[in-house]
Image 1 (cartoon, rainbow, N blue to C red):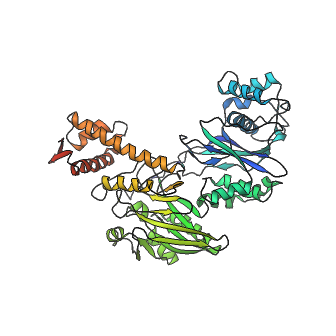
Image 2: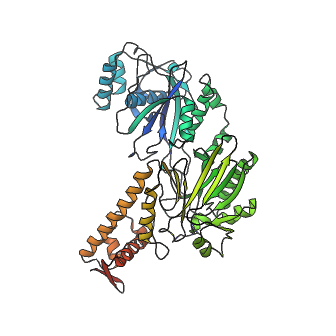
Image 3: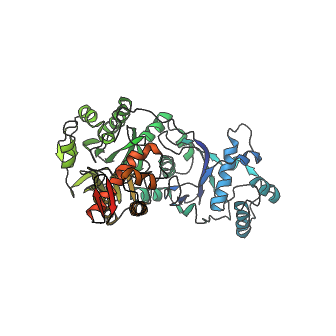
Length: 507
């Protein structure tokens, strides 16, 4: 199923130029504007972020005052254009008497491609001025991400007389928050943000005056470290490690969770350079006074256990897993403790008074001994390989079982609060219930396609794959055959099909 000798490293995607605006208002009681990205967005869906977007080629044609000695001037144009398109706020000279109705009309005109941003500014007599923006540090999306952006961050005060307006679509909503309020929402599990947003909010929470200077003072070495153990939510650190996994994934997500005590979930890489990366992260936490309690394995697959014994021996950590997983990997990994369904692992932090309660959920389907972990306070679900950040999950009999898998997904939907999925591969998913429902719908639809193909006289698994998986490269058909077999076993168990040798027929 997984070729452990394949150490091919995918070449990092070239980052696209983008700009984002840290928009502020009310100097006496400062607030920052955050937007919630739409659930259909291909990147950071349902995350909270600063408004912004990609650079347009035409941005280079827009004249800017106070431009002398400024590098990447075009990115200031991109930032101003993007927040005008997304929020209706126009940061420019000459907008002092611009009415809300006029701004809305200009925004509609620009969004309908009736006019270019440059021509709109010239016609209305508005002028962009580099002095209206304060430059914050640039961030580049980490190399493991399938989508990458070279994002310049800027800050500006909301022009007097203007208000933000979000038109639902790419963005779902916008909200003005005091920086400490925004951080508290993140701590409480009410939003997902990425490292650059967290760093900006943290600097703002210390005071708006000179906050960008504090951001610039963070060394590149420290910034790189922050992206090696990405704090997606307070107390939840994601460390993506390159593993011999199944495409399109290239990395397996290792998670470190907790406060004064922490657990390490799925240190899966067998590669020395990746193990060294995780060693550095763990050592940094230990140096901060944190204690590593144990290593937890979600399931038996090689891309989730490849670094377990290295980490266990280096830091003298016990290993925990489900009984069925422990039985299956006993010759490869020493499991010291068994975790059963419903067990709660408590991790606390004295300085904040916070407690993380990880409730183990036996979630078979992808693997018989698969465990997921639900954190009750924040509504966070660490899904292992029950749900992943891109693509679908392979259900490969005999260890994989489609009935069990669908039951596990439906059990997730019964959880009282579900705000984020932290998967074994790919990005953290903020539209938690929507993604689980999408997975269930996909499996039901795939089953209907298989039944339809059999009605068209497809009898063997290869014939069904050729008929149903027309959107999948032929090199991936062996994996598709495993999923088809899982569906057929489910249908046979329900008495809806019958098997004779290698052929299947509808009953």
